[in-house]
Structures are given as C-alpha cells and as structure tokens.
Length: 94
Image (cartoon, rainbow, N blue to C red; front, side, top):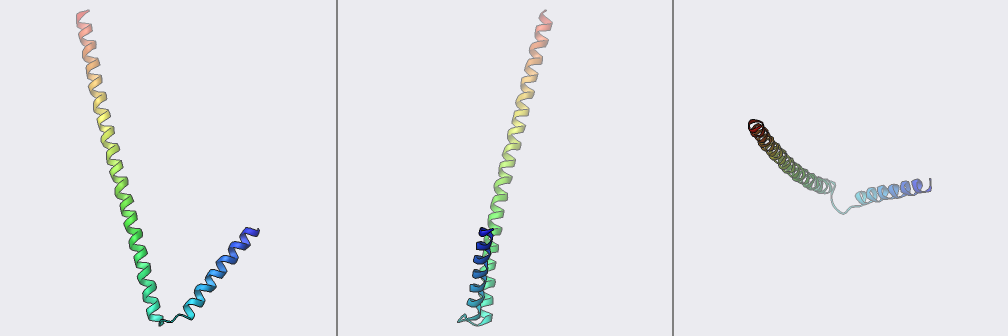
C-alpha cells in the first residue's frame, strides 16, 4: 500500500508541475500548443518508423523461414525419390 501511495504522490506532483509550468510559461499559449503538437508529431513519426522497421524485419524473417521450409521439403522429396529408386532396383534385382 505504501508503494501505491508513493506512486500516486509522484504522479500527482508531476501533474501539478506540468500544470504550473504551462500556466507560468513565458511563451504564448499558441506557441506552446504548436510546440506540443510538433513534439507529439515527432514522437508519432518516430514510433511509426520503428513499427515499420520491425514489420519489415519480421517479414524478412518470415520469408527466410518459408524459403527454408520449401528447401527442406524439396530435400525430403529428393531423398524419398532416391529411396524409392533404390527399393525398385533392389526389388528388380531380387
């Protein structure tokens, strides 16, 4: 319970500090709002870039896994054909 109260106190203090900072800011409200909007847009753009990068990385890994699976399937088919051929040769000789 003490930790919850501490966190609540810290969050309340931070919110009060932000509110006081905005109220007593040396800039006009329109400038402050523009700065907040610009900063938010920067964060959103950065987040979109990171998401896009992660998406591309996952797509690349998925394509790699698909290629590996297809290669393994082809290898298994070759091994199966070789085994069948050996069995037919053995049967023909017997």
